[in-house]
Length: 330
Ligand SMILES: NC(=O)c1ccc[n+]([C@@H]2O[C@H](COP(=O)([O-])OP(=O)(O)OC[C@H]3O[C@@H](n4cnc5c(N)ncnc54)[C@H](O)[C@@H]3O)[C@@H](O)[C@H]2O)c1
Ligand SMILES: O=c1ccn([C@@H]2O[C@H](COP(=O)(O)OP(=O)(O)O[C@H]3O[C@H](CO)[C@@H](O)[C@H](O)[C@H]3O)[C@@H](O)[C@H]2O)c(=O)[nH]1
Picture 1 (cartoon, rainbow, N blue to C red):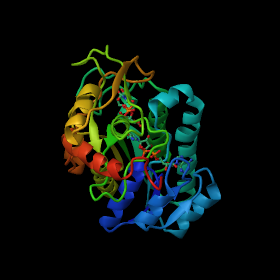
Picture 2 (picture 1 turned 60 degrees about the horizontal axis):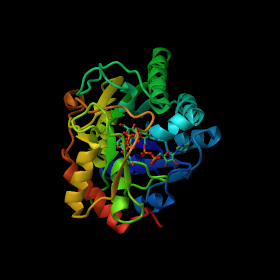
Picture 3 (picture 1 turned 120 degrees about the vertical axis):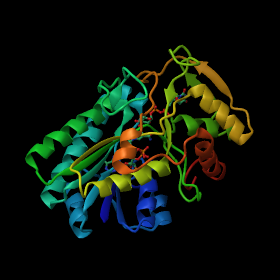
Picture 4 (picture 1 turned 135 degrees about the vertical axis):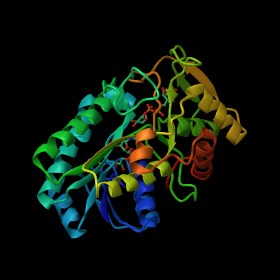
């Protein structure tokens, strides 16, 4: 398939581009590189359009010129904490931009859409592991922005009969390509595993644990850490599933929850080095504990995580960060 990967120069998008290419599809990166990396395009050697998704003429031309069958939409702002400080930025880029993408797809007659949703749409769930039937009451503007798009997708399908979509609710993406070619490079980097590894490497002075008084096994937040290559594989399966299904909502996680303290201890084990840790207050917008019931993804897509434990995930991230402590080209 010809796949426009919106946000393909970013972290999860680039890993998916790599997997799409390896699986024999034709990915085209579309990214404004505001939070992505031009280096990815050279490394992956795929066609790319450097432009904003709100540039409608350029987006329309990209859809038509590359005879796109499916849009995979990774482009968004994706920090829970930042969304609390700058909600309008999140509603603008995560909701309004997505509406523009969908409208442009309609004009071009491109009717298959794979959307990066998130477990942050569940807020603090009533029961964990979380199934797709859990209530969706997000506790951050970021989570709300993603839930709004899920509603837009359902509404759009009512009047646009050909429109098919998969909304994939990922848990915490982490790890890096196991061949070391591409990796994780966010700026600012706020994600737990990269922050830990950069603290070990001396790029950051240390790590602050955000909150130790949560009602969890050791007082710190619990998350489901899912390898980025596993996410990429799920996207390809979901895209292919749209041959037979019109609508897919799926959690993408391992089914296992690990606390912040457990992740720090695992990183120390994998790297053989001590992490400089301080304990601080809670971060606004953080849910208490989130981990998936991954059954639907297995039943529907035939997908399950290959990296089931944080050791192998952190090892793949460590391989990348050791060689690229400050990311691409720095
Ligand atoms: N990282 C995670 O743990 C996680 C978990 C759940 C869901 N998600 C979702 O997955 C997606 C990808 O996350 P990521 O960590 O790879 O983020 P990222 O910031 O690394 O990548 C996003 C890419 O989109 C591009 N982009 C953003 N707005 C754009 C616009 N208006 N026009 C063109 N390009 C634009 C950026 O330049 C960047 O390259 C996001 O939608 C995020 O909400 C991420
Ligand atoms: O310096 C740090 C960084 C993180 N954490 C904690 O580590 C956990 C994970 O945080 P982080 O890696 O920032 O991820 P999340 O805030 O859980 O958000 C990620 O995972 C979500 C799904 O859970 C996605 O939707 C988001 O896009 C993605 O940024 C949370 O409990 C944080 O409070 C710390 O204690 N100290």
